[in-house]
Length: 76
Image (cartoon, rainbow, N blue to C red; front, side, top):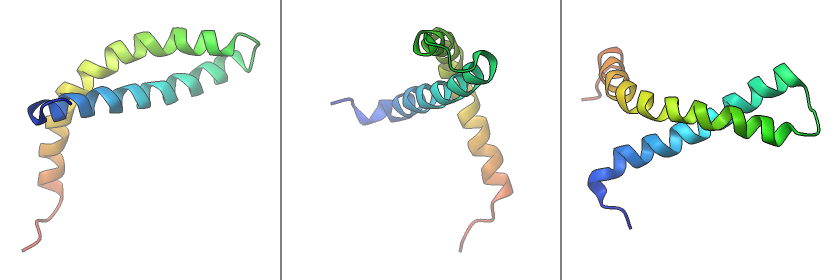
């Protein structure tokens, strides 16, 4: 089991993996259609996307939390 202090990193890892998987799949299908080697093209687009998405999520998530905190009224 992973220690709780790594929760935000694990969250970012999983979120960036899932989001980059979905977005790269949509982009691949829009660009290439549905060729016989779709899975190979998709994974070829997904891996480099995830390598960029993971550190980006780690940097952007705290900024997003702060922005949301300013935009959302706190309940009493």
